[in-house]
Image 1: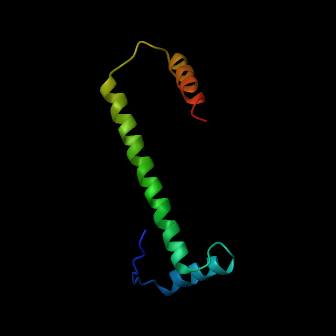
Image 2: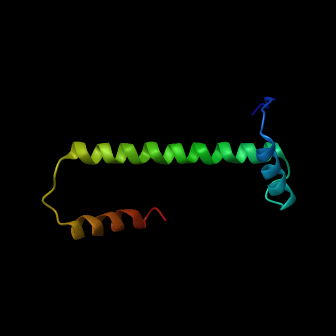
Length: 83
C-alpha cells in the first residue's frame, strides 16, 4: 500500500485537542489520529449501508406468519455458528 502525503489545516482548538490526545498516549502523532478517524468513519458507513440493505431486504420480503419469538429464536440459532 502506497503512502500519499496530504496537507490539512486545523483550527488552534483542534490542534490543541489532537496534541492532548498524543500527550495522553492515545496516538503517537497527528497522522495516526487522522487515519484512525478515517478507519472509524469507513466502518460506520459500512455498518450503515449494511443496515440499510438488511432493512430493504426485510421490506422486500413482505410480511410473515411467524411470531416475533419464533423469528428471534431462529435469528439466534442462525447467529450461533458465526461467533
